[in-house]
Length: 176
Length: 176
DNA sequence: TGTATGGTGTTATATCATAACATGTCAAGC
DNA sequence: GCTTGACATGTTATGATATAACACCATACA
Ligand SMILES: [Zn+2]
Ligand SMILES: [Zn+2]
Ligand SMILES: [Zn+2]
Ligand SMILES: [Zn+2]
Image (cartoon, rainbow over all chains, first blue to last red; front, side, top):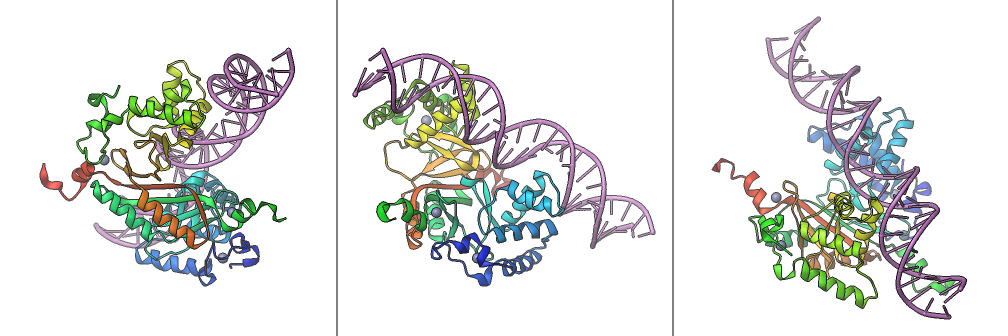
């Protein structure tokens, strides 16, 4: 189902920036998700499944209302809670992440793996990359431990420039 | 101007969790801020100054509309942009931070020092502590560098339990 | 004395999120 | 079979957060 020719992520010239292997895109993730959830006694219902699909196909961060629009157009409910509930469910189960700086959601690119995700957000093109956040999580955990704080969930986001936009905006001004 | 007897932060039994030295509270920070800004050709105007004061006095994270209410009651403007502009100004100049998980703002506890702040947010009592985020910033920078991303600003927040609430909620159930 | 800049204020609107309640579905227990 | 409880989905209505666009007034300074 993943079509690189229409995938904004894949269309990016900076494959290194958004390094996702397509053996995991859409369908595969979906199957994986279903298995995982079943093991935990959870259900990937139609709305939830379709919501995840929409995020996977979009291959970028989407606002809840954008997702809702898609869902509504396909015969699901038309009201905000429909989208928010599905998105929150996916987030709780590690299948999607919330990007707080964008008030948006994105499909997890590494479902199943234990990860405290870190996101790199380009302020120009809004592309979001999920970076391995293990080292960051460790550092954060240590800082917390020092003051006796128990970490349960983390939000780590960096705003800046993706390689492509850095070229366009950077010191290379006189190229064109 | 800082009165520990009415300061929610100071009233906390977990001084270690919110370790702030009062030589820096309110007035001192304010003076420092003014100096710093002047050096950068920026002005700590009445609204901005009062906004910072409000955050410092509150000694906790406040929503923009809460701040606005205070400002309005004191003769400043009554409309959202008044608060948002002041808060954004303070944030841009390192005098306040935005806590995205809470949609709130808090005065910086370490103004002047270069720091990529990390916040520890108690999900029970909502107390926010600003932890030194240098190590975290480094880890994040490295992860970003690997994919050619240029970091400009970071958001690092941990949700969990402060020491006090961990005691109350934790495995120590049968104490009372 | 124009005129550019920046700060403050306004009105109006956009955007994001949740509370509260009604209905449907399905499986466990009687 | 029916009842009941758990959970999912849908609704209406409202709340909370944030910004666009414009008017007015200062100060700075050519
Ligand atoms: Zn792809
Ligand atoms: Zn970009
Ligand atoms: Zn204090
Ligand atoms: Zn607490």
